[in-house]
Structures are given as C-alpha cells and as structure tokens.
Length: 293
Image (cartoon, rainbow, N blue to C red; front, side, top):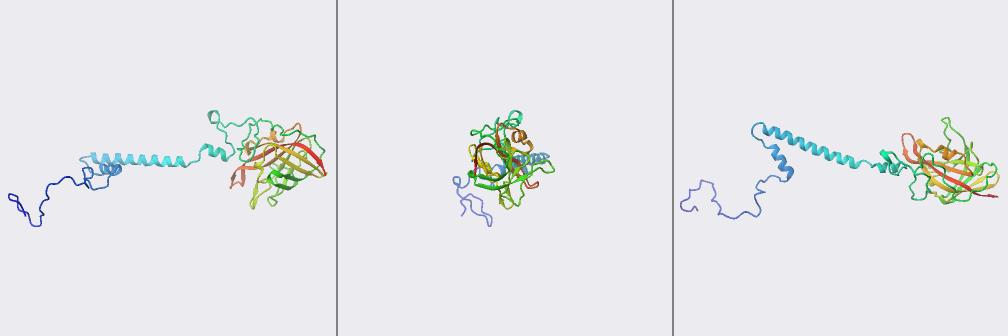
C-alpha cells in the first residue's frame, strides 16, 4: 500500500523499495553491465559516436593504433621463431663466435676431436696438427687392402679411387657402404707423405663405413693392411670439420716430414636438393709403427 501523501501508483507499477545501502554485488565501477577490461573500454570509446566529426576521426585513429599493436606482436613472434646465428653456425660446423665486423674467426690449429667435442675448421694457413706419437720411418710402396679402426668398429676393404671429370676425388660406389677408397695418385699408406682414404658417412640404406668417424680423437689408432703383408699403424693427431667451399687443400695434400694419413668423409648439413653435405670431416694421423705378417 502507498503511504499518505504519495502519488497513487499507475496500473502495473510496483511500489518503490525502501532506501538501502549499496548492493555488495554491484558498485560504481560495475555499473555498466557490458564486458569490462582495458580492451573493452578502449573499443567502446572508439565505437560510441561523438558529436560532429570527432567520432569518426577518433575511431580511425584508434583502429590504426590497434593495427600497429597487432603488427608489432606478430613481428616479435616471427623473430622469436627464427634460429639464432649461433644455431646456424653450429649446424654448419662453425661454432666459434664472429670476429670484428661480424667476420667468423677460426682456431689457429686443428683441434684434438673426440666424442662430444665441437669440431671446427682451423684457419686456412694452419699446418697439420703435431704428431700424437713418435713418427716411424717410411716404408716402401705397397697398395693398401684393408682398413681397421678399433675405436669405432671399422673393418673395411679398400679399393683405389682416382679423379672425376670435375677434378674432384672419386668416392666408392653407394652400393658398397662398407667400402673405403684410397687415393691412388698419392702415396700409399706408410710411404713418405700424406696417404688419403675416403668413405661415405651414410647411404640411403643406412650408415656407411665412416658413420662414426667424428668420434675419433687424438691418440686413437688406425691400422691398414697392405698387399706386401705388412700392417702400418697410424695414430690420430687431430680432427676438423670444414666447409667444402674452403677445403684446406694444402693442409690435406701438402708435403709432410713423415708418413701421414688423412681420412675424409662428409659432415655438416645435408642438402636434399643437391644430395650432398655442406662440410667435410677430416682426420689427420701419423705413422707410428710397422709390423710384418
């Protein structure tokens, strides 16, 4: 019922509530039932009309600001997803930091290698690593027939290889993954100078003869059986991984003061379009003993 002195209620009109304190479920900041938050308030301020030209101008300006923020966030995501320079250098086998003006620097000598070691190319004019053991005297010429590397479980036949039409060293056929090739235009293993043996790291069917070559380290031994019945033993001096575009020709094929050996295979990143690797893995070794059978 209405109290005395109040206007009568219109049909269907409810009697007013008694004066009460603020509803704990409702306050001044929540008086607008629409979604809240900085973006919602920002959007409402842009979308709600304003007198004259102010409304459209403000809307255009605010939409431009939103677009700029979104563009900046997308840029941050793209930058974060790109591999770092360090990751790219590691994948190419060049992990030492860049020198002045962003130029990559290289060690002054070939490293010792070994499991878990980072393999890096030495500077272009670095000499071969110093012998890890006392060099033995050279022996007479005799073609190599078998290669044995106990430390990485290699036991493979050897065959001579020459030079391709592109003036590159030949490699054994892919159909014989456990076959290694001796460069027939160089010294035979045990003679004075660097003998060179090449082999695949893998083939389409799986691992090849030099799959584990990168595990070799200074001090490991390499044994080669020869056609004259002798066995020449080399001791590893060092290991490096170099880009094929900067192959250290002089360090590999240059004259040496003692009988030496070079084991070469592929490394680095595999290019599926060219079916080749970016790098070469090179093991340097010195003749340290000779035995006859």
